[in-house]
Length: 318
Image (cartoon, rainbow, N blue to C red; front, side, top):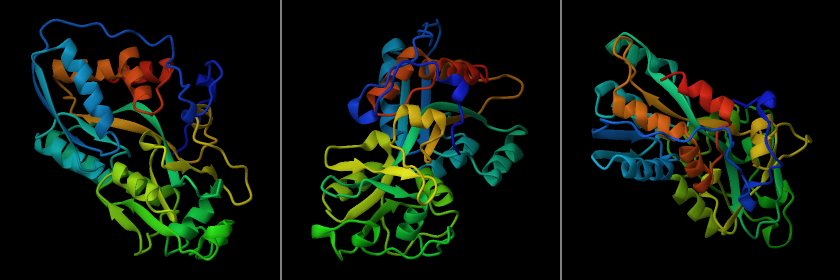
């Protein structure tokens, strides 16, 4: 899913994430503390959002010392069953719920879960910092990671096949990815593998940080994760939506315009009763996340903030 949001780009000049120059929309409202917010919450879901959730929770609990929130991030696939079973009130996900997950929720509660976009991510393809490859097309990613080649591209096994020379000539491409419980796994499969299947040689990692760490220590490695996990040991290659098309880097402007082909929203799903609405503690946590303070934390963690218009639209869902 691309973010075609040209009407929303009323921002000052924005440079790449690597320069850490992303600015939070000045129109975003400050969070206003309310009385009577106490209790416990559980958050179960996305590993991609794990660090971000922890930072949000820390800041929120400073506002409300009597609130306790537990965060567990083992993959987006764990969020729907936790919300359905009532073992979690917050379900962070790096993908949208599948229709069958929504159906299961609705079968139990009689209404659909509420999806709230809380940040933007440019899903990045990382290579070792010394790798000379600067850009790839989605079709080449299909050739690298997939065994079904739904894009029509051929199998790519060595680095020289994608233009790397010198020490990389003839060296096998070492593949790193996530496991099937991960929303990032599913999103990459859908968009970079054209709904195809991963190669059996992809080394599945338990989390996004593990993917990036593996690539940083493997000169011939390549992997994917949220841009917020960028480290000095890796670099994010520019991506083109079409072979021989223009490649775009993972910047805020390119994510907002839709030019970067793997831009996506990050979500928190909640159980909003069709009769009684949201629990006050859940509503206030989401309001905090969508506020200026919450979106400043998004930038701090290396992700991309919602604009005022986006935040306002999501707040209306509460």
